Amino acid sequence: MNAGLKRWRYRAEDSAGAVVDGVIDAADRASAGEALRARHFIPLTLKESSRRSLPTLKSGSSSGRLTIAELARVTARLRDLLRAGIPAAPALRLAADQAAAAREREFLRALRSDIESGRTLTAALARSRFETPRLVRALVEAGEALGDLARQFDRLAAHYDEALKLRREMAAQLAYPAALLALVVATLFFLSFFVLPQFEQIFESALAPPPPETRFVIAAGAVVREYWAFAPAILLVLFAVGRLAARRYPGAWEEMRLSAPVAGRLLKVAEFGAYFRTLATLIGGGAPLARSLPLARDAMSIGILRAEVDSAESSVRVGERLSASLSLKTRCPRDLISYIEIGEETGALAAMTGEAAARAETLLRTAVQKILSLLAPMTTALMGLVTAGVIAAVMTGVLSLNETIQ
Image (tube, rainbow, N blue to C red; front, side, top):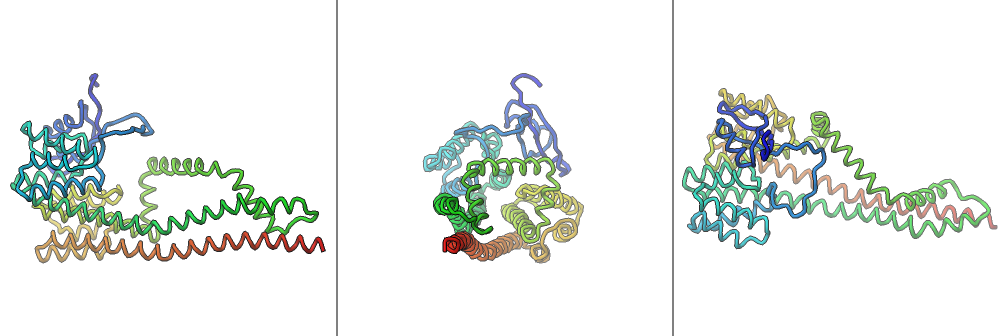
């Protein structure tokens, strides 16, 4: 490899619609993308190849993938400005001036600079140091071709607003059980550091040994006081081992997650919900189905499910219906596929795919609410049992000590 060039790993779609993987040498991401397009490839993912096994920490890095929150704010600002009839370059300048986050300002100003130099917004997104989802690039490309960027940014803003709303709802629902779990841990620490040591001194000075349950509780408190500082390191090691195993055996790890009794179905619902939400946004924005399917597949994070959907899409390219292909070749829940069947029968595929995504999000919210409605009282009961058990064990020891004295 020549000096100054970097190696990039890519996943791209060739002229026949097949997905191929490989590596290419280029000076930067933009050059690598242009080289792939010169080969008549459509880049799907493009990442710099590195020999390092562990990622380095970069403080204040301005590159990388834009978060959902950042995408929601950027697309909403541009939607409002473009709706008002402001051209793309001035709209980007105004949106950058309105942005409070430095990453968003840098991203928007770089896009404006590229547009003012004669590039299209699609080309500017491809050259950007900030990685944007393929959904954004596809709809922007369709908007420029149709001359209606405002409508496409309206769809993008609605898409990322829904995704952000769902994520915030899940985080809010998890807050209460997390607080209860923290309270359980705090209670254990309080008993171990402040309550049990006082009784431990009393029992050590007594002539008779305490009952077994009292000795067990006191010993457990001593272990907590002695080794609590190692708990973060142990958790970190377990996390690192889990990550390493997931990378070393990704298929087995994903299969285990998908086969879990309750979490497995929720994971499938979430994955196909993201797939259908992206597909509905693309089809509604005017992208053809054959082009939308691989773009929507990129919204899925489970490799096994992506491979299944890829196989189903291959059948669609030779004339089969999407609903039949998904039913035969994927683990998509049947109640979601029924919406796709209705859309194909009525000719309203975009609308019914959106309904399928909404149904998936409703199922996910309902399931999480049910789980958390059970988790909260169970955590409260656990805290009560632990506290009552420690107190009962200590009081048993005190009573036995009184009997010995008498």
